[in-house]
Image 1 (spheres, rainbow over the protein chains, first blue to last red):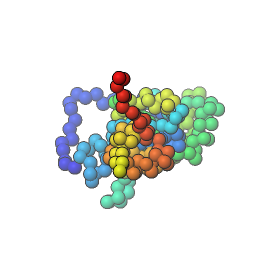
Image 2: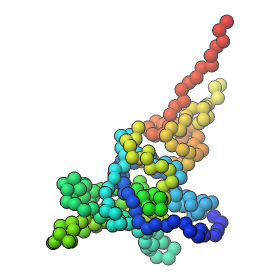
Image 3: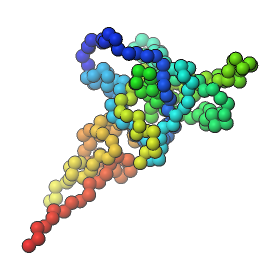
Length: 181
Length: 63
């Protein structure tokens, strides 16, 4: 892979934050394109971009996981020793209520392999987890609040480890939002 | 002796683009240059993206 200039065009919009979060159970996915390998790939983008569709099993689809505006984020942290660096990719969401459906989701997801698709405000879709390294429920910090001014929130954190930051999904997400044929 | 069919003559990829894919239950599989023997094994194992091409018989012109 040849080195190339990494530039930033003046004036490009770059709003921070995420807009929507979708999740699926790992066992509902049929296939993932394999990301490029730094030893053989020719484009930097191919190391972290899914350019062809991820496919779910028949009748399966992604579902939205609500997140309060400006209270969710996707983070990547480099970890590991020299010559063995990798990434811990984390998704944090904040959910406002204590509805039975939401508590049930937490119970169902607590010990399950998950995959998340997160829309960033810059229109990129990031993928947390894959068939080899799925995402796991890492933490749940929930409170009813003590006073009305405190609010009721659940801050959920999901983590997927991998060789790269959470990859970008470039095909349209719409095909994953309806039951697969 | 009948010549064995090539991959392109016998199979088609359905619902997936060529490339390397991690397929549930099959692992990482390169669908770019599958040969017919590999495809036969995958097809027998119910690989989800392989379809046998239907046999087409050339139309015989009516007299």
